Image (tube, rainbow, N blue to C red; front, side, top):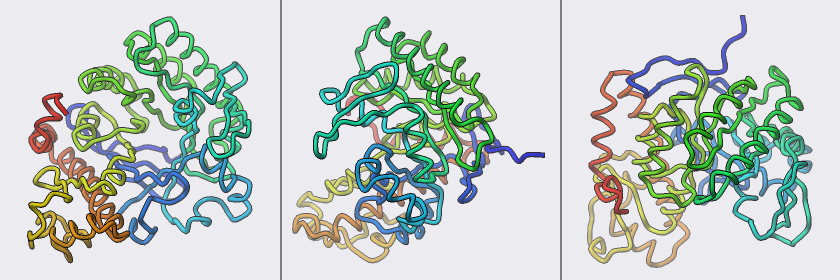
Length: 376
């Protein structure tokens, strides 16, 4: 009997705790995946990530294809060997990056033609090509090519885009049939901000028997209330027995809201990007470490955190590093923020198992009142 890719262990309402099996280990869910765009989580080494318990990281197909090149990575044993990362790796299809280069790309039936942001050279991503790239990277979880429509797109455009995304997904499934090798393949539900199209996309994508399902096209500039409304509509439509991944989201409040809606997997550049900009997440709420009020604060950044930064350095020292533009500031701040995010999802899992998820989520929301009220 074949072991399932995803096993659901506990649920509390829509919130779920499970196990995702990959070629490089079992990933407990809910899980947050640090973003290592070019095969490196900014400012951190693999041993840092292992020390804070990250079971899976994310790489970017678009960027790794352009530099250093997926064939070069393949000749070095794949991305795990190239980057000395022993855990699991998810790679996105590059669709969002191409979406963000709207002035440099053209979308057609065959795929997406785009110009490199590095040197202006022309390239074509097809559903089959992005899988070839991800196979060369040997990622544990591969994503299909999709079109991410901008916020504000009308129903007619979104419907047309969705039809193309669905055809691309079918081509990807045909090029990489279920049970092929050990790379898992996830489909992506699109449909913009139209509930009928989200429901249609869910039905069509789920009919292709992907190993897991992702929700794409959220956090693209819409008001938070609209994102949460569409998330709450879409997530429960996905199969109960497969892993659910919310792409590119988000803040701690976004994550606990997503878990409450039934999502299992998350990624976002926010914790490391904000760390480099001096915004840190703690058990007491957000801390802007650049503020003068911390210049002589000898307390730890977060008294409840066990990360290397909180165990060994004061707020005063972390502020000093930041205002001095020391590289160590990026490392310590990033280490802390990712520790916070990984602790957040582990505590969410514990709360689900113990049947107290709503109370847990309310406690996190209380740390971010402006965001919870939709004013931040």
